[in-house]
Amino acid sequence: MAMIASRLLGKARNLVHHKNLSFLLGSVVINNTYSSSYSSFPSAVKRSPHASQPGNISNNSATISYFSHYESTKAEAQLELQEDDHDQVIDFPGGKVAFTSEMRFISESSGKRAPCYRVLDDNGEPMNHSNYVQVSKEMAVKMYSEMVTLQTMDSIFYEVQRQGRISFYLTSMGEEAVNIASAAALSSDDIVLPQYREPGVLLWRGFTLQQFANQCFGNTSDLGKGRQMPIHYGSNELNYFTISSPIATQLPQAVGAAYSLKMDGKSACAVTFCGDGGTSEGDFHAGMNFAAVMEAPVIFICRNNGWAISTPTEEQFRSDGIVVKGQAYGIWSIRVDGNDALAVYSAVHTAREIAIREQRPVLIEALTYRVGHHSTSDDSTKYRPVDEIEYWKMARNPVNRFKRWVEMNGWWSDKDELELRSSVRKQLMNAIQVAEKAQKPPLEDLFHDVYDQVPSNLQEQENLLRETIKKHPKDYPSDVPL
Image (cartoon, rainbow, N blue to C red; front, side, top):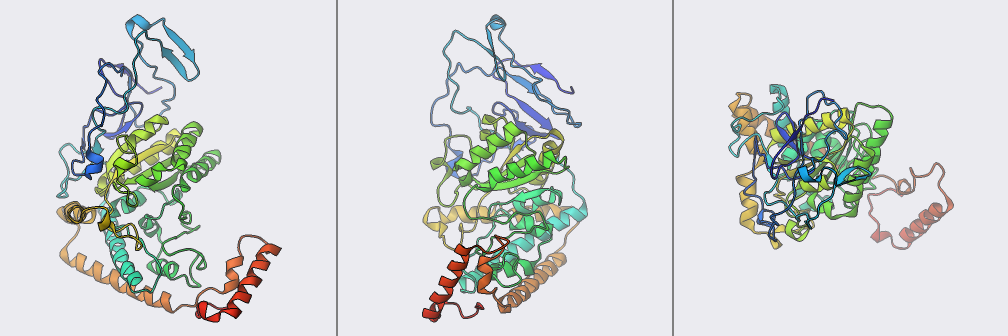
């Protein structure tokens, strides 16, 4: 096996290195090579551990070097036993455990936070000694163009909702890099199970602006036949599961999808997204443990924007964010700067290779920030300061940062920028006009596509609905055919 188990003295940590991305194994990363702390993350996340750290915690472990040919690393590194404890062990299922005569509790968290991998600094310049998965000019330009398209789409659809023309909308402002860069690093064969803030993944895969508009307006061209709220997109053709509103239900489902890919011998993985609030749901923990035990090729990508819907992270959990949760379940994990498109691309690209070649799950925590309100039903200024929002919107804008890097490479100009934004806006306005004028799906579509033959109970419900509409015609939308 191509692996090196090396003895470390003192408080060593388990690391897996691949292309200078550090994946956490059994303890907290202390080596922050090619990484940097995210010092300006919301104060709720920055706070130090609330309890003092015991000084006698044992951290003896093995360091594993992950090589490019991805040979299996299972059960190769054993915990190094202290010299005077070699014979004091219990051969328990899962590996040998050393005995000790000293009572020692494992600390609730490490004294040092896990570092955050990044490639570009806030000015869009590569960090010193930065090593990342290279992208071509064509890839970089497409990534930036799609980030601008997503940004423009969010801005226009948000205003359309405010005008009362659609019932609901939710933006990805501030999280464009997580959307587009992760999508760019995947294969079209990979199955995506999104939350509700990943339209950029679908955009990258080829979902047209007209299709986005059709779904938001719920017309006859909507693939979901108008039966979902706006922004609940889905496409079988593009391997993008339809979004559902309940939080975190997609996570264990993604593990099942990944395991099916493994059983079929497919060279693909499942990728699922959630927010930091989603990790407070039981489905997150069930999905993580399920994936680890079954060794499913699935990538969990958590957008930690510090606020969930309106709850700061310090009121959600006491751990060091999300990345350390992977360790508890035996999953390789990495924390990445979610506002750095190159860092996200590199992390997801590498995680995909690990998931498929090693047949194992990977957890990625992307530190980012939701600049917009949670949805059009929310006013985020009620629970977070306006100056914090403006700081992240201006100083840490992921689109602007990536633009500066593309420009520094000579791949983008002011003329390109003007033409792109003008073109996207025109396409969107036209798509909205077409979608708004299109006919709504007929009433009967509410009761189809679940059973081959409509059962009696659904037939009864349709009859009751039609009777109600006859009694109260003014309460039924006139543009929906009966």
